[in-house]
Structure formats: C-alpha cells, structure tokens
Image (cartoon, rainbow, N blue to C red; front, side):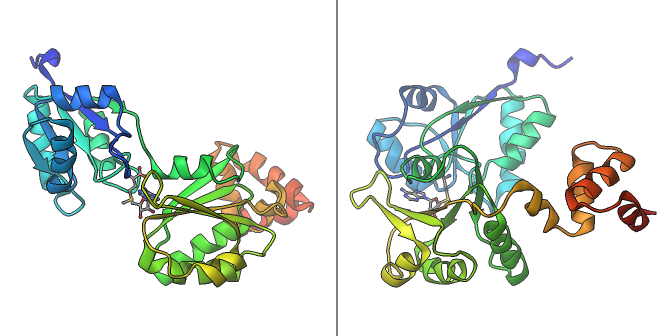
Length: 278
Ligand code: SAM
C-alpha cells in the first residue's frame, strides 16, 4: 500500500507584482525549504531567487507545457518531493497557470497549501475608491468577437463592481468598447504599475479615461463601478427565459418551483411560463 506520509506537498506561492519587498516571510521560508520550484518563466523567477539569496532547482511550468509538466510534477510529488509553484507575478492561478495542476492534485489526494501574498486585482480594488462589498473579476476580456460582446454585456448589466485585467497595447480598444456600454455616471478607476515606481490610480468616468489616457504604458487593472440602475430582479428579467430557468436550476430548485419563481419575477401568470417548458 502507498505510504501517504511520503507524498509531497504542492505550495502555491504568491510572489511580488513589482516591488520585490512584497513577499511574505513564510513564502521565503517555503521557497528555501522545498525540493523544487515550478516557475512560469524560470529566468524571471531566478532574479527573485537571487535577490532573496535562494538557490533551488527550477523547472519551467507554463500554459504551453502545462500538461506534460504536470505529469512530471505529479510524479515527483507522489515520490515525496515538496514543490513550490510560482508565476511571474502575484498569485498563481489568477490569470496564470495553476488551476490545472491544483485540480489534478485534489483528485489524486495530494496536499496543496496556499501561501498568500500579492495579487493585482485585490490591491487595485482596495485603493480604487469603488465598492469592495461585492465584485466580479473577469480577468482579461476575450478577443473573440462574440465572447467579448457577451462579457461587455455582462459588465453593462452588472450591479456589482467589475474588475478586469488589460495589457497596455490593448487598452485603447478596451476603453472604446467600454465607452459604448457604460454611461458616464459609472465610476472607473485605472490602476497602473501598482507597487512600482510609476504606480498611479486614475479615478474618473469612462469619458475622462478615453480622452486622456489612451496611450498609457505599464501594467493595468480596470475597476468599474456596478450599474446602480440594475436591480437583481431586472437583471434576471433581462435574461432569456432559458437562462432565467437555468439560473434557478443551478440553485437546485424543482421545475415547479422554478416556474413559480420566474412567473413572480416577471409578474406574469405561471401558466404563461409553464407552456414554454412542457
Ligand atoms: N497572477 C497575477 C495576479 O495575482 O494579479 C496576474 C497575472 S496576469 C498574467 C498579468 C496582469 O495582471 C497584467 O496584464 C495586469 O493587468 C495585472 N497586473 C500584474 N501586475 C500588475 C501591477 N503591478 N500593476 C497593475 N496591474 C498588474
């Protein structure tokens, strides 16, 4: 029988998003203690390790070799190695690789431990001046036209704060797209180069940003205020009937209850709704 105690641990270690001081004491200790560090870009991580005076074997682990390298890492974990997974910046798994190997480790009963630290979206949000109570993180907007249109529609209708990541060379197009769907009442904060020398938070509305900040450089997070005109009810009523049905189905309601709820939301007789689902 396999000796479970001999299985290693995968540590998901957050690293700085600019300022090299933004790494925890625990992260440094773990990086020192593990047998191996799996890094998105080994050259990039080597700079951090040199700064911390840590010498450790590195293995590259990124989007394009994820499958093959996951096999190797899992084998090593099963043989008892402890491994730290790091990305180029911030928290692995957040718009970075990590998700796949983490799912595989869970399925294989391999221990995974998060080592918290920097994350661009959280630090942009907390200084944005926009509500932190409820928010939706959308990562990078898709490039595919249809998917992008759907995401923009989601932003338009969201009554929660929305956070997106953007690459500087795509900012101009993204701001134009946002201008088409946002009205000027919605606040927007552009967080740029946070924790670095040129850190700045530009707060305004979409028109201000489009006019003044199209050629901005550096790493960027956009935080968009929720649409105050959208209540949960009219958000639901803007869904198609099928989507409205699925919304309640996902919450585990029976068909009968779903039909009742949709009828109530839409203020129509439940038979009207029922005939669409026979
Ligand atoms: N895993 C990272 C995290 O925890 O935030 C995100 C990695 S994602 C590939 C890179 C994107 O994160 C950039 O395009 C930018 O939108 C955002 N980002 C990373 N560092 C940043 C910084 N210092 N200032 C502003 N945005 C940053």
